[in-house]
Image (cartoon, rainbow, N blue to C red; front, side, top):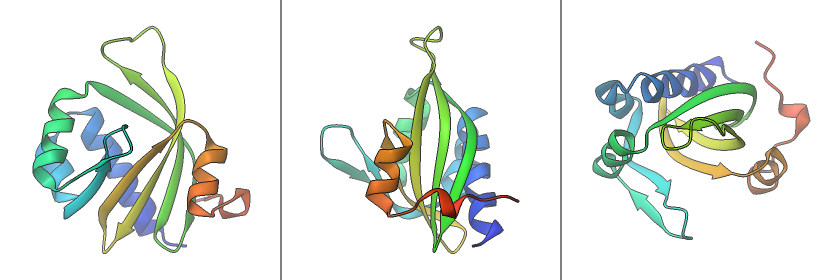
Amino acid sequence: MSTSEIATVLAWHDAVNSNDIETLLALSSDDIVLPTGDDDEDQGLDELREWATTAGVTFRPGRMFVHEGIVVVEETATWAADPEHPRSEAIAFRVVGDHVVSVYRHDTLEEAFEATRLNEGDLYEG
């Protein structure tokens, strides 16, 4: 397991939370893959920039799991449009060369584990 992957994902969260678009883009691969929520995907930095400038979300990371470039973060997401109802979720990141190459949101940690084949044994205890 690599603390570099964890550091990249935490820095990505910080950039989203502080609306630091330039840092977010620098931490992401040119062809980053982002699901759109309707079984489709968007790809690239332009799509990431659009999402980051319009999403209005703040992430509070909790436990993290890591194995071979995949990081799953159990977290709370608070959307500006509905700040009274934060949502628990798990996000799976693929990190290559200190860049996030894909981001997939899951409703539960179990769903993220099923999609990534990670498990409780991959808990990061840094």
